[in-house]
Length: 170
Length: 99
Image (tube, rainbow over all chains, first blue to last red; front, top):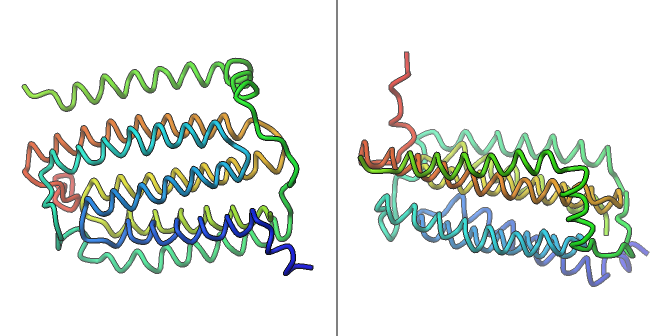
């Protein structure tokens, strides 16, 4: 019965995409080439968009592709170019005591995994839930969540002005 | 689909991002690791949103995406400033405040 469950198409899709995402994320933090790291990050972000589709979140998936893969990655590539990173292998991308990150990450993951197993052991996601429509989402944003939306627009304004002020050359 | 498979995926990405923030010296790479962390949070928000049958998680995921975009903009402006002032973006060289 469990074996039959594991073979649902959604689960196979999840497993493939999750494996690609984890490999991509590991490459992002281990590769010694800044441009390669940015391109591996594209893989992870695209996989995340695919997972959002599996989670019945179309609009968020499209926003992820537009904002992250479209805009943020261009910003990253501009950032690497403007700081004249070597296009090629770079040897000093890591701290000298980088290995301390490994136990921290492993312990953190062990804690999270135990907590998640205790809390949500075998809860299932509803398999027949309808896709969240853009109309529902906009009703939420422009209804009960209007104030955070407003605050967010001020955050974006402040970020734009701050970026211009910081990078102005004078 | 189990709820836990999405949460564990989010936890794995989160931990890889934390490792990147700790291990990387290059400021641009640290910003990329922060993007990994924010994405894992988004996966969690959407998974819980589907489990509860509500739209709130989607709203917050959109807000997280917008805040992440603002963060990258300001962060890269700061990295550029750092590069202009000291010709390097190694985070270990920012040690003026060390006692």
